[in-house]
Structure formats: C-alpha cells, structure tokens
Amino acid sequence: MPDQRTVFFVSDRTGITAEALGNSLLSQFDGFSFRRVTLPFVDSAEAVDRVLAQIAEAGKSGRRPIVISSIVDESLSSRIRSCDALVLDFFHTFLLPLEQELGVKSAHAAGRSHGLRDPREYFSRIEAINFTLAHDDGQSVKELSRAQVILIGVSRCGKTPTSLYLGLQCGIRCANFPLTPDDFERDQLPDSVKPHRDRLFGLTIDPERLSAIRQERRPDSRYASLSQCRMEVEAAEQLMRRERIPFLNTSTRSIEEMATTVLRDLKLERHIF
Image (tube, rainbow, N blue to C red; front, side, top):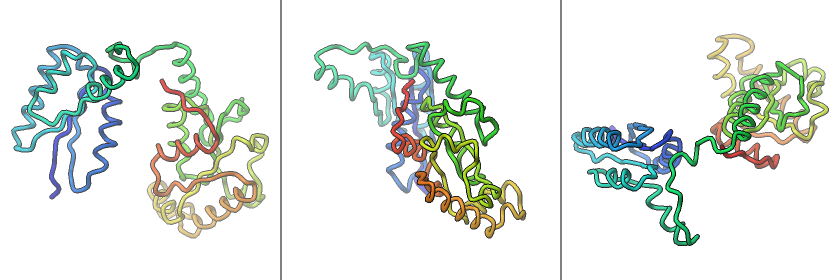
C-alpha cells in the first residue's frame, strides 16, 4: 500500500492558487497517496482555530500532515506555521525577497489573485465563456469571425473540454467543429470554417483510445468500432496536413497541456483574471 499523507490547502480566499502550486509540487513524488483537503476563506482567528484543529486531528494518524498555505495576513499565517506539520507558506517564502528586490512593502491584501479588480476583465471573461458555449460542436456559425481559435477534429477527440478550458480559464473566444464522414467523402473542410483558416487548430487522437471513449457513449456500435475510428483519424490527419492546419494528438495530454499548446502555437495571449 502506498504511504498516505494528508495535505491541507489553506487559503484566505478560494484556495485555487494553493491547489495549483501545491499539486504541481506533489505530482513530483511517486509512491505516495495524498488525501487532499482544501480549506478556503480562512480569514479570521476563529477560522484559523478550526483549521488548526483539523490539522491536529489528521496528525493523530502518526503521519505528519502537510500544509500548503496562501494566507496573506501575517498574524494568521504565523499561527498556521506554528502547527505540528510541514508548512509551505507561499507568501511568507516569496514576498520578503520580492519586497527586498523592489524596495517596497507589499500590499498584504487578500484576494488579489482571484478578486474582481477590473469589471471589464470580468465581462470579457463572461463573453468568452458564452461565445464558447454557443459555438460548441458546430451548433452555431453566427459571428464565427469573432472566434480567436476554432478547434477541429473527429467526434470525441477532446474538442469540447479544451474549448471550455480556453474560454473559462484563459478568456479565449473558442469555437469547435467536428470533422465528419461527410467531410471526408468530400475531402474538404466544413464550408463554415473555410473562411477562417488562419484560426483553425486541429486535435487528433490514437484510434484505440478513441474507440474506447466512444464505446462508453455508444457500446458495440459502428461509430465506436476500431475500424471506423482508424478510418476517421487517418482521414482527418490527411486533411489537416494537406490544408496545413497545425494539430495535436490528445491521447496522453491533459486539457491544460492542450490549451497551452494552442495558445503558444497560435500566439494567443492568456488573460489573467
């Protein structure tokens, strides 16, 4: 059995920063099972008391807990650091060197990472999400010229989750269109995306992986058969190569990796909210 350790992500706001940075660190260690506990909105002495009690309870297992904290308030974070656990305090670790380098004191204000700083950024993000939802799976071609990227690929290759990530996390107006057997018979791109070739990006997938995914959706169907998947993937890749559309194999990549590759290759700017 792998060694299990309890990891607390403690934050005075949403905990997203602590989770993102903490999970990146934990991913480097094989042979461990991590029980992750996120404790957001720890912004008062009473909330700290509750957190310390949970940490102490976890420590009774005999395995020292790990605490990853992004609490800005020093009076609160110092109490967290005093508990019987390995505490990684991101602000305590990085703010002092930055203050020394920049020659000024930091604001020590909670919520700067994920707070609503500029209403225009908020509405831009909502617009990107709404656009992406409206243009999922080719369901709308209205205002397609406003898309910053249009993902194409066979059914179930990862277009929708990648589009949603680009819209929600990056503020990118993303549309996606399926490549279907009809397109392969015509040996052409869908007519609606032809005028926007400079914004096309293709996703492909290993046929075996695609077949397994489609079996979950339509078991034992022609749609899910390995022969059909091989035909579609081969035809899609040939089409994208001929049309000089950059494409990426999604079989072993995370959504975050796929989205980052799209941003890099199309030179799109990720919006930070």
